[in-house]
Amino acid sequence: MVVRKSSIVRAGMFDESMPRCDDYDMWLRTAFHGAKFSYTKKVQARLNGGRPGSLGASRARMAEAYLNILEKTMKSLPLSDSQRTLVQKQATEVRARYCLEEGKYRLQQREFDQAKNFLREANLYFRRSKVSLVLLGLAIAPKTTSRLAFLMEAIRN
Image (tube, rainbow, N blue to C red; front, side):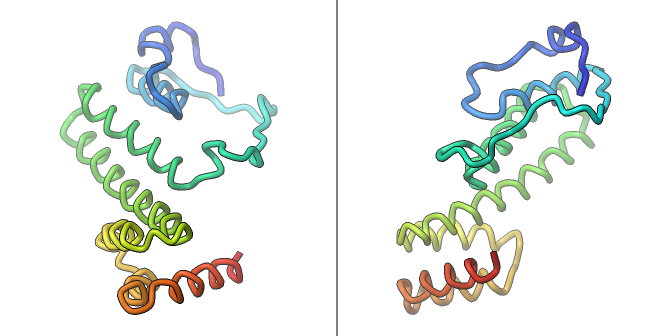
């Protein structure tokens, strides 16, 4: 991707107060302010996905960072009504994705009440029968449900 430096300056540079994904936030703002992006087939960087504790190692942290960017976008950019509606729709979906991933994590940590809350919120959006079944299992036999859920996940992966 190639972006002119003047576009980055006009958009306000990097927001160093953001703990994650400050580059994505900057790209979004530069595009909003008229920057043109281009694609190149040349490899510009390589990402090591196996670093423990990295942002990419946690789907929940990735979704959380994306949600924060969308919320910041709604607050800080002068969006039209249709743009605001689109960003709000995306934020609702990302919030549900965050809740689903955080619910899985809490289930793995055997934090059953928190897992139920996150999974319940996620399923208000997704309405998945598997999540409903896990929620039912958590109400009846949390430890067994936790073991079965992660056995099924291991088999699937």
